[in-house]
Length: 332
Image (tube, rainbow, N blue to C red):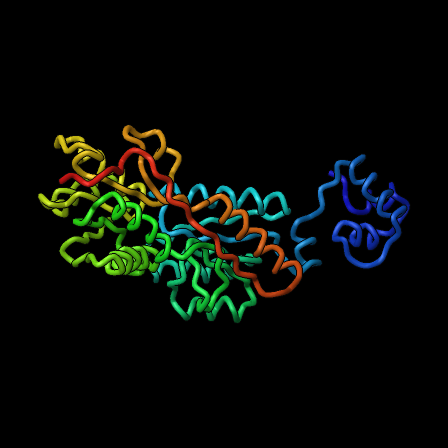
């Protein structure tokens, strides 16, 4: 395997010059750069990653901690995050917190110990001790799937509360007055909590209400959603707002299994716009969150901050209601 010394000999320069060209540091002429790069290509030389990391004081890795693998929306976002990071020369270390704040805290510490240059988190609800450790270690981080101007951390995401306003407006315009909600588990989950709050606020703005008896919280699971469905749907319920598409899939399947016509008898909405949602029969009305744009933006924001040694910048993204076939005029 060729060494840095071999490259230096081929290019007619010192090993220190090869190191400067490889790491793009110090001063060297365009001619020297061209000779070194040509020698690297001729010899198929691969710079030692640990040496490069030491020279740059960076590891070239980003970390990401997501709540679960049971919701495909996280996979879409992380796939875009990894693709953008790789294009900029960074690799990804991925961990799953299982919605457990203590586990997430431990994973954050492990990421710091692994020497990641930047870290992606989901939501703004994290243990303060973990955020303090990130700050003390100088590890830049960004919180995604949420946007709050008052957040301690940089945000690349959307306002979960406001994102529900369009759903409520759509259903109320269709004549729905008896609306229920199947939400994600709100404990330790600010996104689920804000979506419930957004539905309740907007209904109250319309002179309607969402009493506690009309809300049920379920795991990101089609099976759990199906079990909860019949407990939340009352005889006068004409619309069901679901906290994400996975929950909506379970609701739609259960409605169909008991002969409840959608949307003639019951309108159903989701949140995320997973790729399957447009292929269902009937196709799901849902909120498009732009997970790929969010993942790509988060990666670029983190890497820019790392390489320029500056704070991570926030970016607010906006959701969009996608009206399909699972919503219709309220029955009389």
